[in-house]
Image 1 (tube, rainbow, N blue to C red):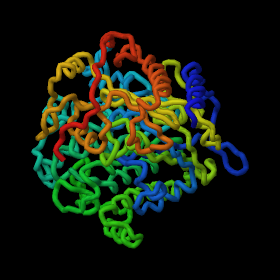
Image 2: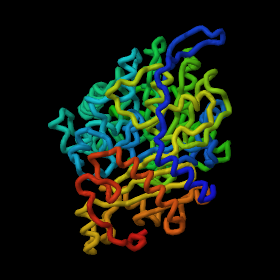
Image 3: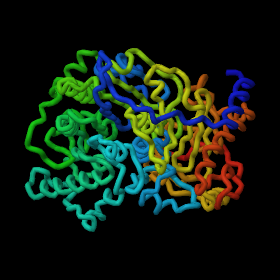
Image 4: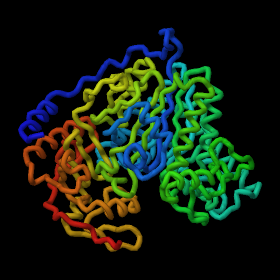
Length: 561
């Protein structure tokens, strides 16, 4: 797009906010005769730390035949985005339709009182007194289920020193889950998490991982177990095959501990781990619902793929098992499946607002309701799931349910028109605005931090690294450290990227296109103005915003590789 055309288009974006489409039309599935059957089931599958190019259909050097077939027979989204690129805020938005910076959960509010800047990262929690999509569906006759990784509630419970006062039973890090007394404690803790999740709008919660595997605080349980979670999903589907249902299925793959490792040590996982080690401790039974783990290696090798990428086929087997189960229950035509990742991986963009973090693989699959072979190239985001599900299920949005997203039901019906002119993103001390062709990223620190930077004071680095000239974007220095290793522009105060010609965002063209940068900053301010109690540098006028940002050199941090 030429600069003049861009400026003309973006001026219209700034002046005219997009109108919310009608999300109140009733929607049901029907058979070939047109007879009304039932409201659709929704299965929302979310993977972890999976970059957009790590599936066969997106060009990844992996064997994922079932997911690729689902893509061919469904609707592919080529520019699906996550508005915050670490686990908790991404998942919060998927379930609420709100930007994570609007969170009012207890952990978030302790860190971010009103009129203070937010530093969005793994502090977002679902609120008990606010709507989420599961709670709304439940109120409207749906059965709702949650299986897999949470990282959405009770963040204080994740710290072992808080277990006893919250009713969780401690055990040593090296405790043996096969010990009956130890295992009894693990089962107790798992049930506590299941009960806690149910209170947020879920009829069923099982196969729960509180957050990442390490938050189980046990060496032997620090292993992925896809078989265990898929079996829990089967149980929910079997129980509710005659009712419309919503299932949030959250796998721990591809997050660490590294699923690509074939090491047999306790701290590594994937296909050679003990299949009896689960989020509820040691389980005696065998899980016979997926192809054998040995066969995963064999089929992966037969497809000509590297052995250390066999975990991708394992994930594919899990998705395929869910598809087969729907067919066996004779409800596959009644069920919309959404497949998406929570954000990209450490390899590039996790814990940044670059596209390798924000842009994720996404498929929607619904036999006889979504026409096969479709693709959509315009920008959408995880803020859009809640309104779209309401629209599809024919449910009216309550007046006190704040939603930032828009329904893309028309896209499911074949529309290629854009529903957004721009998207907002937030992570730590950074904010961004993205259009289809451009992205602007701003870094603004709270006044006290900026003053320290201006005085040339140093900041604590990740363990074993020299002090920093400015802090990482996130409080979590582990996330910040790995993000900086592969993103040399991450410290630059103002960044502009031409996504059409530089999709990997290697070249900051902020100084090259000042007029475009000005318009993008105006768009970012419009988004930020919708957060009246949250200052962000010169973009907002509420308390703490009135300070000047010193001219910062474009630097690469002093980091040992």
